[in-house]
Length: 225
Image (cartoon, rainbow, N blue to C red; front, side):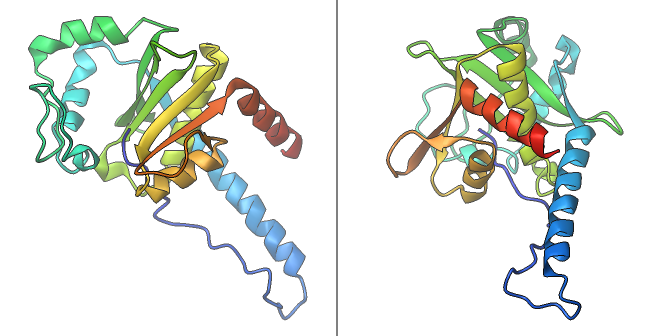
């Protein structure tokens, strides 16, 4: 899964211990919550999922070969020729596009792949994917934001869009993800989206969200809106 980063312009939470001159602590906290919700909705409106055409696979080739984007993936013992252990990059030559495209695109509900697109200018900012676990009744997921688009508040809405597609379009039972325990930003993003830990603490975290939990949270959000 790609590294997930926080907003470059974070909204500072007001301290509940502060006493404001006008005594309107409650109003200030309420305004903060309202602004936080507004920013979240704006980011959701700003990006969308786009299933790429065959000709658009140039973008996947680009991000797979970008050392900064793929730095999270370096240093592993992965036994396939396309992998560069020093940079984490994965070669994606045009001769491999046809087989890859046939395997991933148009294969729902077994597999799903899409780009993340910024609506205002149509710029690709990353990719998402889902695939059915061969041994268990759940889907594994992945998100990769291109390095130059990280830190701009896209991680949470990107994850929300992927979960929305998984549960509302593909009707999956649950979604799982694994990544290093050191990636605290990714962990907080997943927990905020409703994921829970499946395994005891270790170097690799496994998290999951069920269909029931997704719709429970969505119903709660609708009632609060």
